[in-house]
Image (cartoon, rainbow, N blue to C red; front, top):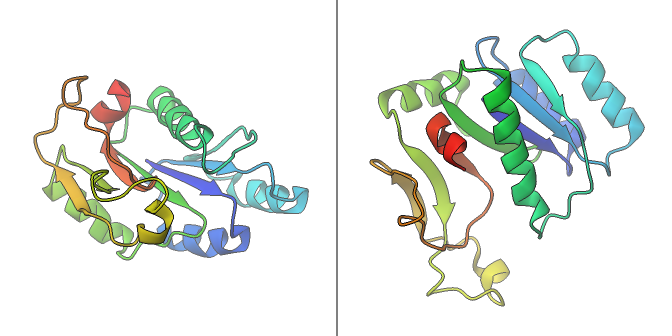
Length: 173
């Protein structure tokens, strides 16, 4: 299941979506409140006939606040409620562009079941004052192979909002 936030480059979204779209996947789209009515109408008109595409209600989204996580949690909950036919949650924004084809992404995830993926930054190396200037020097892409999310296994790291989570991980959160 894909969650796509449209905020920065709404025109780029359609190009990305056309290449990413597959009738066997599930898509939830969040159109930020800052997008023009024309952009909202264009996107809604494009996806209205696609039965596997949903639009999440928009609200004021401040990118450096709790709201950016709240919208992710809302999206996970929505997708969990709307369909049981997905194994992974993948979030993108309108300025992300997958470097691999839909086929390759699905193939990789099928061969690496039950793993979660995200980019993280070791908080001992970066403080909040230097995070933005060092955000491209991340500690690594982590694949949590046998991760079981519980209060005892959560370690605070800084990171961006890009991630791929299993359905079980989304349900836990």
